[in-house]
Length: 198
Image 1 (spheres, rainbow, N blue to C red):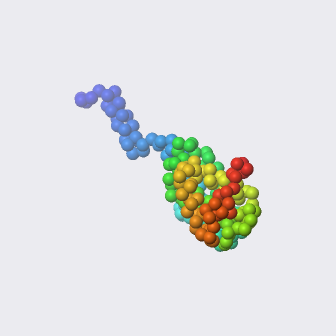
Image 2: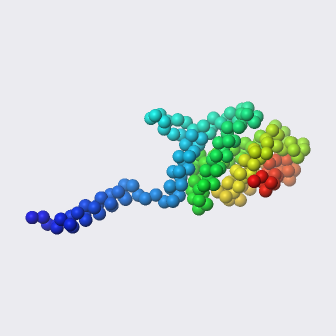
Image 3: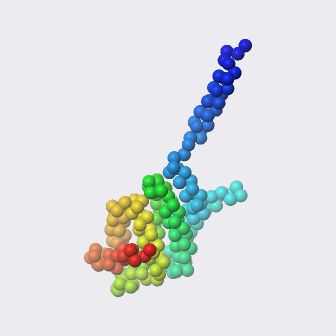
């Protein structure tokens, strides 16, 4: 004769099973789910991924290096296109989860590095001598990408982080040490009015 009635034993087994499921597979928060969705969407550009049991390396670093080496529209095209897709994927992340997604190393690196690259490409090897020269070979779509990155960076990391980045980058540009802060600012993409780029 059993010590427990059958119904009580059944309840204990079910409760134990549910506790084990929760313990070994805890429910995800909304932000954890957003990270998974974002990682899946960016698995070829930012994140390594598995394909037929083999690990494939993300394309980000290769595209950045290629853009720097060629320093022309064709050489940077794919990097800029993939960055635009990344920004669109970040726009789909709820604002309260954006800092969590933005804390992922690959995301943080890509956002700041591509913005820095755009500013350096516009500047060139020496300070631009006229307003239009601050774009170098960058076109309207590229400047729009700069503005999209700027908005995402300030939304994710705050205005103080953006200002620190602006100061550091402005002072590191070739020949900027011979200009005042205001002169250097006027000759970079930093001075462009992003309201003109939807």
